[in-house]
Every structure is written in structure tokens, then in C-alpha cells.
Image 1 (cartoon, one colour):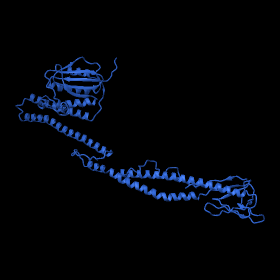
Image 2 (tube, helix red, strand yellow):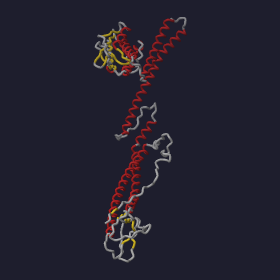
Image 3 (cartoon, helix red, strand yellow):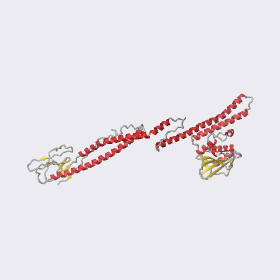
Length: 476
């Protein structure tokens, strides 16, 4: 007996050329330089719609692909089974030992190929009674059209071993796939359009507060920094963005107010010595013969020194505000305090033993200016002398400047670090204070990672306490 062989049909590949590259191997449109993204000019709303529609379309495409592949697999398996059954039935008819009394009918789902033991293809005919005319049974293709043999070959003889191959039909697979695509494609397109429209509406509603914020923000100028952007009620990212913008506007408003006050105070401080010098010069020119020239020059120099001090302080504050990084090195605060005491003998004293490990990292010039400002402020308010103490406590170096003056009330201990602040304006102007000394000292302390606070001194006056991070120095 012959054996049964049934092969599965193939679906031809769609397309036979590579559409991803041009003839020279470069991607289409490649010009050798990077082009801007296609979505770079789109709004956030349009980008969200494209992202949502693209995601839904990709998901639907994957689902349809999986469904089509599963359907094709099942239909091909069924077609293979039908082909095997048809091949078995044909082989059973060919195995008859007696001629058939009537014409045999071969029913097969696809083309039938019969080969003898030598591998030659024989005409698919069925045997009849002896002497009677043989009737050919021609195979049919998957579309039902008759396929005649190319040339007449050896007829089929009953009882001989043959190999029968029946090709499975792909008609059911093609019909089912086409029907599925025709039915599912409109529904998929409708779903993608629905998602795109819904995303457009929802994103537009979500971005509505952003438009209001933008409109309000564009109308804010340096003259109306008190205005704020509207904060939406929803506790989402836009709510946090609005709060952040308002907090930024608050800081900008405070900085602008501080700058305006600073400019006004600086103008006032500079105008006073300039006006005094001008008045003295006009008076001298009006009465040149009766003028005490040495005294007039002395007064003019004193006002000029005050003017120079204010200009120098303003320049230093500008540098501190710009956060210019000065040259840093290891600085011994104990040595700085000793130098300051030597410059003012009798007015300053160094209390306690000098700490050898009171070393910090910073600018020696700025730290010296800080100590000078603290000492000058204390000397203007003390009754007798000013004491300076340097101590090391853990990882900090503490420098305290104490006086026995009237002290600073607790309500004014933060205000004294503001620029051009004087608790006693008349005495401060008379003694040459600019109102910038403690402000400069406080900014230098913060620039070096430290703090400057006002406390009550054990001597009854005020204590200005500077705390800076200590630097470890290897002992020799």
C-alpha cells in the first residue's frame, strides 16, 4: 500500500521590495543632518491627542494581528485535516482489488497528486470494468476550476501502491481573514476617532487654567508685582505650578521692593555728604577772605571720607549679592582677632586664651572686614571697652564681640541686619556709621556657611556671635 502525504497551503507574502531604504541604502529623506521632530511645533493638546490616538491604534492593531493569526492557524489546521482525510479516502479507492462497476468520484478540497512507486506522476483516473473506457477524474484548484494534466501519463491501476498528496484549500482562510478585516477596520477607525475627540476635549479642559495663568502672567510688569496668577481648585500638577509661580512672584516682589528701598537709601546716603561738601564749597567761595581754609578742608575731607565709605560698602554689597567666589584659604580667626585688637589698643581687648585650632576656610579679606564691622559697631555703643572672644566648640568656631552699652532690644535683633538700618540715626550719622556694617557682616557670614546672631552680653550690652564651620588642620 502507498503512504499518505498532505501538505499545508501557503499565503503569499505581500509585497516584494524593501520600502524602508532607498536604492543607495540610506533611509528616505536622509540629508546627513538631524531635522527637528515632527511634533516640535505642535501644542500640548495636539501632542496629547496624537499620543492617545496612536496608542489606541497600536493596541487595536496588535489585537487584530493576534486575532488574524489565531484564526488563520485554526483554519489552516482544519484545512490540513480535511486534506489528510481526503487523501486517505482516495488511497482507499485506489487500493481496491476488484474493478469498480461504475465511475468513481473523487472529492478533494484541493489539487490531487498521485505518484507511483517510481515517483512518476500518473493521471488521476479511476479503473472501470475490463474492456470499458476509463474515465479521468481531473483535480480542481481551491477556486473550483478544473486543472487538466500537462501530458498524458500512465493510468491508475487498481491494487497498485501509490502515493497520494492532496493540497489543503486556502479559500476559507482568505475569506475569513478578509471578512474580519472588513468588519473590524471601520470599528477600529471609529474607536480611534472617538478617543482622539475625547482626549482633545479633556486636555483642553485640563489646560484651561494654564491659559488663564498665562494671560495673567503676561500682564504682570515690574510695577504691579503684587498681582498673582489664579490657582485652580484641583490638587494636581497645574495647582502646584500655580503655587510655585506665585511663590516665585512673592520672592521677586520682595527682592524688587528691597532693591528699590536700597536704591532710595543709597541715594539718600550719598546725597547727604555731597550736599554738605557743596554747601561748604559755596560758603567758602562766597567769603574767601574770611574763611578758615584748614577747617573748611578738614570738613570737606571728612564728608568725602564718608562718601567714600558708603561707595565702598555699596560696591562690596553688590559683589556679595552677585555671589562672586573670592579666593579662599585657611584663616585663623584667633589671629584675625589679635590683629584687630592691636589696631585699636585700649578700645578692644582679647578675652580668654587664644585658640590655636580656630581655623576656618574662607576669604581672609572678607572675614577681616566682618570682624572690623562688628568691632566698629560695638565701639560706637560701648561705655568702656569691647571684648572679643574666640572659642572652638565641636565642629564650629565661635567669635563673640561683647560691649557694655545699652544693648539691642529683642524686637530689633533681626532688623539690625537690614541695610541702612540705624537704631539711633542721629548718633550713627554723627559717628560716621553708614548703616551697612552689620548687613555686610551678615552677608559675609552666610557666604561662608555660617550664622551671625544678636544676643545679650554677660557685660550687660549686646553680643554679636559669629559661628563658622571649623576646618581641620594637620598638626605639625
